[in-house]
Image (cartoon, rainbow, N blue to C red; front, side, top):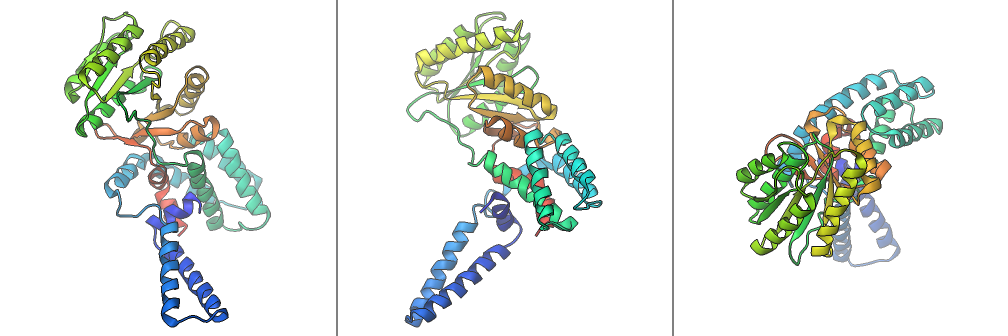
Length: 378
C-alpha cells in the first residue's frame, strides 16, 4: 500500500478497511463452500482475516500522537493553503488533452520548490493517465496529482525518523550549514529536548569565525542548561572540538552538539576546516560523528537545494534539518531534496518556540501539507 492510501485510511475514514474486510469475507465464504468446515471455525477465520487486514492497512491512527500531528498541520499551514488554492485554481481549467494545462502544472510545482525531477515525474504520470483515459475530469486529475506527490514523499523518505545514537557512550552530532539558516538555534532546541528528557548535553562553539557566534551559543547554553565549551573568536575550531569531547567524556554527558562556521574566506577553506574537525572527532571516538546534520532554511527554496548539493559533495552529510517550515509557502523542498539528493530529512522546525523542532515523520508531514486535498479525494 502506498503512503497516500495509508494516510487516507488513517485520517479520513475506514472505507478502504471496510472494502478489504468485505472482500476477505467473500473470499472466506468461497473457500468454505469448496471445503466444508464447522460453523464456528468459519467465524474464527473471518475474524482473523479482518484483524489482519486492519493491521496491514493502518500505520497511523488518528488519535495517536494527536498533538504532534496538529503541530505539523499548524506549522505547514502556509504551504498547504497556498498550494491547495493554486492547484484548485489550475484544476478549474483542466482539459485532459490540453498541453498548456500540463505546462502550467509544471510551473506551479517548480514554483512550490518541488524540484525539476519530481515535477517531471508528477506531470508525466498525469499525462500517461490522461492518455490511457484513466483521467477525464478535474476530480480524476486532482487524485492522480495528490496521490503521486504523497507517494513520492513515502519513496524518498520511506522510514520514520532515525537518529543514530551511540548506545554505548557519548553521541557526537556535527552541525553544518551556511550562516543565517538557524544552525545555532537548532542546536539549542535539540539540547533543550534532550535535557527535558533527563540527559546531559554539552555544546561546543566551533564557529570561531562569525562575530558573536560564540556569545550566542553561551546565551543559549544558559537558557537550556547545557555546558558550552569555547575559545576566543578566531581560535582553532578543531581545538574547541577536542576540548568539547574531553569535557563531555569527563562529565558523563550523553550528547555533544558541535556548532561550525558557515563561512570562511572561501568555500575551500570552510570545507578544509570541517574535515579537520571530523578528523579530530574520529580520532577521539572512532565511530563519530554519529550524525552530520546539514541545516537548511526552508524559506530559501532553490538556494537551500543548491547548498545541500555543495555540502554533499564535500561533507559526509547523514541527514538534513529543515528550519522555518512554518514561514514558507513552498513546502515542496522536502520532495526536491529526497528526489534529487537522496539525503533523508531528519528534523523539521515548525515554529519559533523551544519545542518546535520535531523528528521528521513522513506521514504526518504529508498529511499536514496536503490535508484538504487528501480529504477532497475521499
